[in-house]
Length: 334
Image (cartoon, rainbow, N blue to C red; front, side):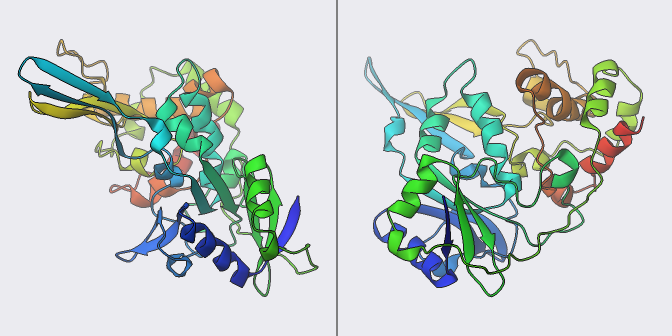
């Protein structure tokens, strides 16, 4: 299904959703930084900047409770958190580099174990993607086989038009339901010209060649040079739309507390620290090697796709200037 919606009607759509109790998450400014956050009004939304962090926080939160416990005398009460409590959500203005990561995470969380905390949020979330008309030097989605207008992962996809408004194209029942529930705000497509798409880094990596090199060079002196600057801060994993590692910890006292899922990162020293004291990745080059291997080999081995969408956030936030695109490009030329 393809429709047209004016900019004015688009803001009306969001305000109607908010008024009916739907959680609407979209890019908004927070202390001068664009972030995907719940809106109180469509007036808070900003559509011309890539949020500093990815959209995954809307359906895979940084921290979440999965169980609570309480002890009174000799009686211990355990209460499971019911995923059914999660609210209906419309995630708006999702850039292709974020939306394309959603099927990547779907595969992980529904593989050998069905993670109902993740899956229930996904079932209740409608993804409204948005084509990119601007990019910067860190963007490299085209290098990993995606594009500024890639519709993968979106239920409804918006293409900005010259003069304002959007062409809306649906890719799921959720997307069609969003239009059908607000038909008065949509019209048939017109002849307006789409805005020119962004032009990110265009040289495409030979990902098959990259994977072949990784297959054969687990032990290689190159890793010492590649990871020389890495300080193991984990910022790259926390802003990445496709990274998905988490830890489960109990927080509280002997009287009461919670069991929680918290984001984790393979760049952290304690990520692979055994209770015995042994750490198989005891040096930072080993940990950074795992990051590259996971994104361009291990995930591909298991699911047949790359664990990177070229959003460039890890490049922008790295405190020591590590450029993963440059590293992969160099590997592809070995």
